[in-house]
Image 1 (cartoon, rainbow, N blue to C red):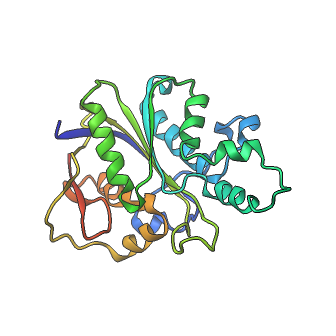
Image 2 (cartoon, rainbow, N blue to C red; image 1 turned 90 degrees about the vertical axis):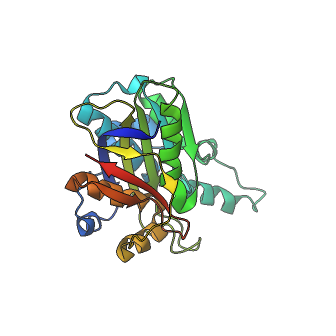
Amino acid sequence: MDKFFIKSTAICCSDRSLLPRFGLDGYEVDKSLIPIALRRRTALTTRMAITVATKACEKIGIDTSKLSSVFVSLGGEIQVTDALCRLLPDKKALLSPTQFHNSVHNTTAGYWGILNHCPLPSTAIAALDDGFAMGLIEVGSQLQQTDEDILLVCYDEIWPTYLALPIGTYAFACALVLSKTQQDNNPYVTFPKIMPTQLTLNLHWCDLVKQAPAAAAIPLLQAIKQRKNKCIPLNIKATLWQTHLYF
């Protein structure tokens, strides 16, 4: 299969002033989507990811209990993981079972499945600024094996300031519901490929991706909003992954 359709999208960012710079609108984090008992255990990144996943699904009225998913993040709940690692040298420190539970990379995917009573497969991916491209490749590959829609969620949170700056300066999340069949004139993207290109990359976008790798999705989200047929860069490296968007 060389193309798949985009049925809906949603975006959330910790900095309200950031998305308007790219002509995009985003959702506020909706804490009410997570019951209080679970909410206390979750970090910002999971709340943002759950928000965009829910909003993207609500737009098209899809049954989230029957939706496979792919979650892409560089560090997951990195604040939790960092806190645990800083405790390890202290032999007298008691490690929190909840923090340990939330330190795994598929924490957010797990919460999504619990909240939506979804037993279907979920994949967790980490690939730096290649993450969005790898997420699309994973979804495209899975769509070859199913006629059902698949949810793609890309998210990154704010990192501890001493880790790998500028990564983690912003928290960013987006979600897309993708399908192999078209409904209501949905746009479609081609299967991502590495191609020779003369694309001129937006420098502001490149800087943002260095700070929040999940923001690699922005050029595609911009083109969808503008309803433009366009060749879309999916990362910022010299080895450039690309897709074509068509309406």
